[in-house]
Length: 367
Image (cartoon, helix red, strand yellow):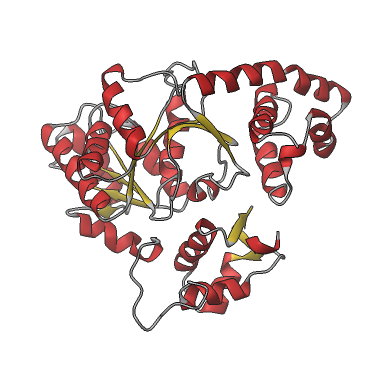
């Protein structure tokens, strides 16, 4: 049987070859979620994808580059996680176009507590940086993972706040895993790897080009239950992250600012558009508490002999090998859809359920 590293090289060659649209690759990976792709070679993969002779040749020609990249990842002390892998971040998997492969340093283990993104201006005020650090520390202290983009300003303050609280933080990069940007954050990046992870979808050696950052921003929001914008000018990249969060049906929060100050324009605009106002960490927790895995259940809910809460066990009883939509589970449970989705994500994180395209779920134990 082919090692997992070899299957990653094969998937990497498929992405590099450009023979199929990204959405088609993702659809195939979801459809193949119950199949062990570690035993598949280029010929078998081409057959499963229905590729013609020329496309198969292009796929095979991409293999040397994929092997080279795999070696560069290992040399950088990093690893690869693919969409079909159990360790792939479950919330990111729910997004419309999740990256087929991620390169990362550190650990992606136990994403079940849930994550919150904190983003904002690179040219943040001292007050904005202090607030970002404070919010990150409070969230990390409550067991949540803090996600940001390793940029100067608010991002840096958020990562530092989480680490100083002894919590976990994830930095999503707009460059290769072996490229440090900004360079002054090299020490911070090492600290992040010790208590969290650096993540990127860009191959090693990729420079921090301007066009990379919107793609990075969709991963920041995709990893998170909600995105908090602390300071943002009218054209800030943080607003792009907030836009992705809305598209991904995630919560958006904004810290209000004084009128007329450049760093307040973006956040105040988000508030006018319906973002949740943040004055303290409690404003964030109120919104996302029903979805987080560490939410304390009432004593009446109890746990079954399997270690599941009564709600989790009931949801499990509704799942089988046939895909069922989250709305159908919601109706059966008499529960709002966003609460049901949080419940199913918890079951997926426990390895008991698996998400399918279109917010359908199946029981993992029957796959």
